[in-house]
Length: 404
Image (tube, rainbow, N blue to C red; front, side, top):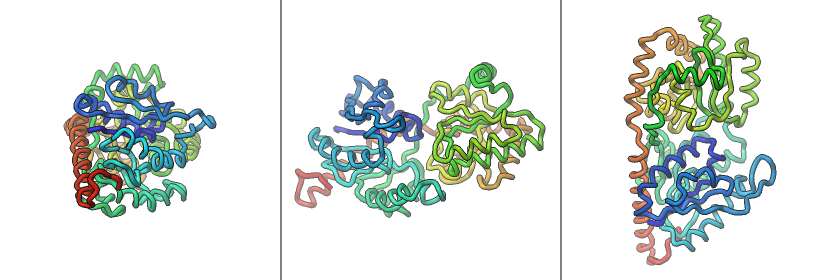
């Protein structure tokens, strides 16, 4: 097959979708000899795909000189959407692509001369109030729903997301394929905890036991505010001088979270580490006493699985797909009940046997996720989409024209 994968929604590599794209592309590389894979990459992101250079064809989306310090011309949502709808189909026809994969509902194509596959990570806009402004909400609830109906196949990263796609986008179940995210088992693995603690103390001044939350700093969806409230109560109730570390780039509403942390009586022990490169994440997971994941909604939840694979006990919300993905291997709480979060923090800090049990359960659970297996299933979805498109064209009496 001639496969094209759009990568323009990776937000400079600092998002969950970016990690999905990077991991999937790496897992597809062993299949590059059998399939001709094209990556469509914004010019400013080319260096992020150096790992694939020479193994797949990397196509630069040109003309992306910075318009302002924040965003480049083609990264701007409206322009990028227009590029996908009007420019990309022409390129797909010219290069005789068999299937194009858009790994986000935000850029799904309406029509193309090849099979259409999209990955939908979550439909949080139907579950979390105030997550998007009105324009993004309209796009997600109205336009994306119509685009979803045009896809030959849709990949859902959890059963929870698959149910939402069927319920809210009205996509037939036979076009929805659940393929879990994988995990880099070599990178995210247990290691020397004492050495990890030494490293994080030196680099980030995390020199005491600490809770870790890995997520972009977003309010209200990622629920940092309630975690800060819970941490304040935990410190007051226990007198334990633990720290709280947030890993992730600032996003919508981050000013609210920073302000709340600054007002905390324990503000010097609440650390914002910002974006942390992939290579350093396993060290943080190994050094943390526990990962706390209070998100109000997730389509999968990669960080808690990464933490589990590194031997870090996990405390987590039960919302969205998290119960499904964590599979009884985490301490859970209602993310809107601060008292439940406090009790989970207190228990994991004081109950060493429970902490060890969570660690063992997490390690077992993390073994379920493999990017190699996920990539093989993605290729099957591509092939099914191509076959579906061919059958549709034959029924229409136009076997030479595969436009939807």
